[in-house]
Every structure is written in C-alpha cells, then in structure tokens.
Image (cartoon, rainbow, N blue to C red; front, side, top):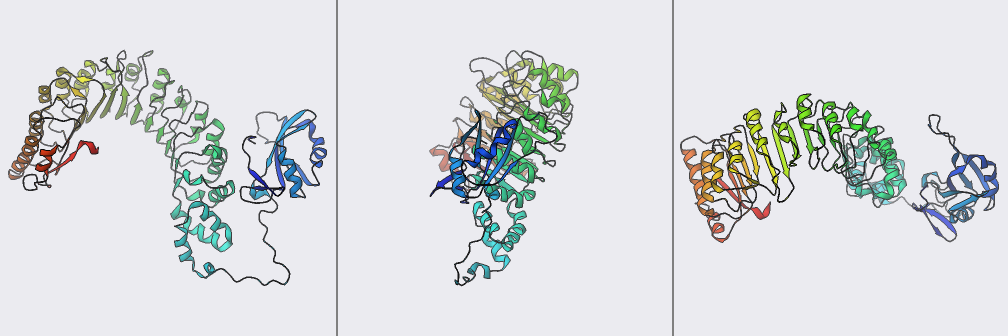
Length: 545
C-alpha cells in the first residue's frame, strides 16, 4: 500500500472506490505476524466484522515473512469508512496501513439495482435493437474508458468487444490510461491483453505498479515495447516482462534503470532491438545475456564501464548496429581490444563520440562496418583525428557506404582528401569545410547519391555544381547556410541533367532534390517551370528541414 495514494473518497459517511462502489472490504499490509490474534479486537472496535483473512506467503519467497497482508470485510459500509479514515493503525505500539480493496473485490461491485415493489420493468434501451456489426462500428469511436464500460454492460456487449478487440488494440498508447480507473485498466488487459502487439508512451507514475502487473499477466504476444521516462525498478520491470517471450524490440530510454533491473531481460530469447539510452548503467548485467540482440543503443549512459562495453559487444555476437554517443573509453583502449578479439564481427552501423584522447581510429578495422557516425562535442578543441580517415582509407575504401560527422568542428583539406578516397560512399554529412576548394577532393565519389553540408556558409555554388557534375549518381544536396550563385547552381543542375537525359547517361534518381536557403531572386526562378522543371529538380528551403 502506498500510504500517500488514497484510492477512495468519502460521501455521506460512506467510502466509495474510484468506480463509485461502496467500500466494505479493506486491505491491510505490513502487519506483524506475532500480533495476528489481536486483529479481531482491533477492527471490531469499528463495527461488526464478517470475515478476516490473512494471505499465506508465497512458498518460493526468499525472505522469511515476519509481516503479513490480508483483508477485513465489514458488514456495514459506514464502519468500514471509519476504519479507512484512520489510514495508519496501531496495535501494541506497532503500526500498519489500511486502504480500500480494489473495486472488483468489493461485495457490492456486481449488484443489480432492485426495483420498488409494483414498478414495471422499463423497456430495453434503443441501443439493444442494433445488430452486432453496428455496435462494433460504434465501439471504434469510443474512447478507451467508454469501451470498457460498454464491454462491462452485459454479456452480449462483452462478446462484441472481444470480437473487435484484435482489430482495435494492436497498438497500445499508455496515455489512454490517464483517465481510467484501476478496474477499467484491469478489464482492458484481461479482455484485450493477448491482442496487444505494441506498447508505447509514458507510464503514469500513479499507475506504474498496477500497469506492470496487468501487462505482465495478460500481454503475452507483445513484440514492441517503447516506454520513455518511465522509472522502472527491478520489481516492476520483472513483472512487466514476465510473459513477453515474443518481445523483439524493447526501448526504455531515460527510465532510471540499474543493472539489477536488467536481470529481467535474461528470458527475452527473441529480443533483437534494445534501447537503454540515458540510464545509470555500468553494464554488468548485459554481458551475460543470451538474447540475439542485433541493434543496441547505449547513448548517454554516463556510468557505463569501458571493460563492460567490450564484454557486451563480444557477448552479442549478432550485433549489427551500435550507438554509444557520449560514452568515454579513455581508461581502456576498448576499440583496440575489440579489434584484437574480433569482438564485433557483424557490426555494420556504429554511432560514437570522438574524444580527443581516445584512439577511436581502430573502429575502421571492424570487419563488417558500412555506416559510421561521429559526434564531436567539445567546442574549441580538435577531437577529430586524421588517423581515423587514414585508417578508413586503408580498411574501408570500398566498403564504407555512409559517413556522418556532427558537431562544432571543421574538416581540413587533408581530411577531405581521405574522404574522397572512400569510393564506396553513397551518403555523407559534413560539418564546416576549412576551404571551399577542398570540396573538389570529393570528385572521385562516383557512387555518391546524397550529401549534406552543415555550416556551409563558406561554400560557393560553383564548387557544389562541380561536385554534382563529377558524381553521376548524386541526386540530393542539402546546404543549411546561404551560399552565393544559387541561381547559377539551380540552372547548372537542370542543364546537366538535360544533357545526361539526351545522351542516355542518366544514373541519378529524378527529380534531383536541392535543399537551400531560398531568397527572393531564387524564388522567382524556381516558380518558372519552364526553366526549372519539376521533373528534373525539386528545390525546397532549408528552413523547412
């Protein structure tokens, strides 16, 4: 029981649950086992007791129970209300807490109203004259709480709901539970839990405990769980995942997860995608899992130990994609060790931060690497190493397909020369380039299809046009700052494409997409569909992306 959370309200000296059911059954916990004989007298002070029950501890419980839980059933609802209003009870100097039992456990939860003597039974409401197909159609337009009240109305409506549920509830948005009572939540999961394939959203803090219980008990066919900022302790995570044996994607960023909580993941034998960004993990738990994880994200896990990163990569032998942004490995040459032990044999996609005192150039030796994203975050310091580009040329000149470099850094001509030798590149994202003429170093990238240049203020339109002419497959260009000769660039691209079409040399995907800062003169040119045909080029403003 959470003594802060009150699950009832008082009206006319009677307590009611949030479902407006009169309370006669109370739940108590943390009562000393040796004082059980005193319970009858204690609760008897408030009124006549119909039944007092103590729950037996679970046989497999690891800790010998000295405290017990149970419920007390009062004959009169007003007596129960008096006992409830004293939230903290004392017996022989020992205190324990009392709360209202759940709505479905109350004796009056399922009672039907009685008609006064001689009064005729009212006619059936018009909705009962509709066929089941119409009822199912209406059901689709009801919010989830109303759907539950519909299903609870009668056996026929329950059957209609159950038939529609597989279609309505494949994707579960947890925000829908904000206005639902615990009883309505319980009914939803009992009726629809097996039909849920995807769970997403933020778990309401006041519902966390019960939601995890209900999901774990009823959602046995879930394949995707995406929760954000939903603090999950070991108990709640274990309960939630208890029967999700078909789970393939689990995303729990910024959920205050510890290594102890992650022990619950051991039985997820089908897990392929795991996102634990921003959690206070050291990494001990992940290194011994047998899950066939292929995509792993540990961005901003500031406490992750480098040696555990090595063990995790070695353990997940099927790992194809790894994101470790803002993970510092300065205390251990993690990348060098991974190369030595062949710890990432299947890794194709890597996202990482370039720290100046880390020899991250060893990532170029990962045998299957095809896509590399580098983040440089230290403003005013050069953390981008020439060694990385040299090693990429040596080991990945034909294999690397995608290169992204983010952050407040700039590329020297030497770096651009090395990038120009990565002839397998199809997509590149570049930060500021030191000099405009260095863009010419990319002219040999004949497989290049897409380029993004951030902080491109020192790039000229003529240099971009030269690159376009040299790269026969280039079909998308993004420039996030104003450059000169924009009109000449657009017309030059149109002219080049027309020439390629006429010579039957076209290799690009049309229309060419040019994202650029559009000013007045360029806007007038773009609107001239004869000079700038939409089938050849599509010009959009960088302010829209």
